[in-house]
Image 1 (cartoon, rainbow, N blue to C red):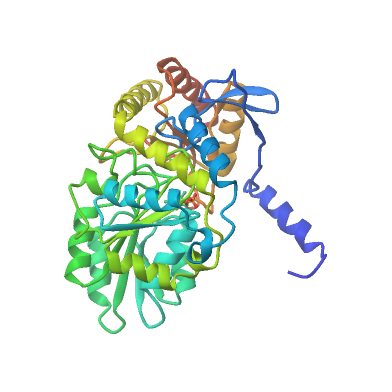
Image 2: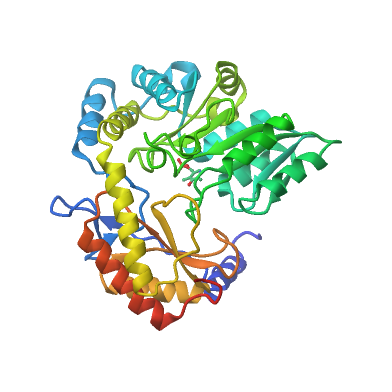
Length: 403
Ligand SMILES: *Cc1c(COP(=O)(O)O)cnc(C)c1O
C-alpha cells in the first residue's frame, strides 16, 4: 500500500461496505457487576461472548495470587526465558501443567498464537507438508505459512479426507497434522481417534490445539484428548491456552521431553520474546488448582448448555447443527454479515453482549452470533437470552441452511 495514500481510506470504506468492519468496544467493570456482567458505553450487558467458560477470570483468588506474586517478584520478568526471565512460578506452573495433561514435560509461551507458530515451524519446514483442518484457528494457518512447508487444508472434521491426503504425500512427506480440539467458532470437536490412527500409520506428528477444550471437556477437564480417552502416544503434541477456561493468560505446549527441549532450543517465538510476567503464571496456577478442586464448575456449565439448547430450540433459534459432545460454544447461524450485525445490535439493546462473527474469521455466508456459556451465568440469564434470540432471529431471518 502506498504511503499516506487515500487507499487506506478506501480500504476501510470497503470493509464497511461489506459489513466486515470490526468495532472495538471499551469494557468497564465494577465491583457491583456480577462475574458475567460488563458495561459498554454505560450500558450494563450480560456477557455471552467471553471464553471464561468456568467463570474464573474474575475470581478473587486469582487476583489475590497475582497481587501477592507481584509484590514478591515484581510486575515484569525482565528478560526472555532462556536468559534470566524464567522464574520459580513459571517452573512450577510448567510442572503442574505437565502433570495435569499427563505428559512428561510442558513449556510456557506468552500466547497461544506464538505457541502454534513455535510448534509448526519447529516440526515442519521446506520440502515437508502440513495438513490442517479447513476450520483451524488462524494461528495454525499462519504457522503453516511461516514454516515454509507446503500446506493443505482438508475438509472440516473429515478424518477420511485427512487420511487420503496423508497417503497421497509420498514424494514430500507429511510431517504434521494439526487441528483444533474443540473448534472455536463452531463448537464441535475434531475426530481425534481417527486422526490419531492415521497420523500414527503415516508417521506424522499430530498437533492438537485445545485452546477451548481444556478445562471444559473430559471427566477431569483435561480436554478433547481426555474426552476421547486418548493419551500422549495418540496425540504427541498438545497445545493449550491459559486465557480461556483458565481465566488467566498465556499458553503452553506439553509432550515428551525431547520435543519440549527442541522447542526451547529452536522455536523463535519462544527464544526471542520476554517471558510472561510471573504474577500471570501465579494466577494460572491458582485457576488450575480451583478448576480441579471444583468439578461443579464443569457440571454447572454442561447443565447450562443443555438448558440453553432446549430453550433456544423451543424459541426456534437457528442453532448450528450439532453432533458430538455438548460444548459451551453455541453458534447461532445467520448467514450474511448484515443480518449477524443487525442481530448483535438488537441483542445489545436487549441487554446482552453476543458478538457477530463474520468472514474472514468464518467462511463466507456463514456469519453467526457466537454464543458462549459460562459456569457463572444464572439460569435466568440463559433463559432470557434464548427468548430474546428467538424474537430477534425471527425478525432478521436465519441462514437458509441452518436448522
Ligand atoms: C484463542 C486461540 C488461540 C490463541 O491463543 P491466545 O493465547 O489467545 O493467543 C489459538 N488457538 C485457538 C483454537 C484459539 O481459540
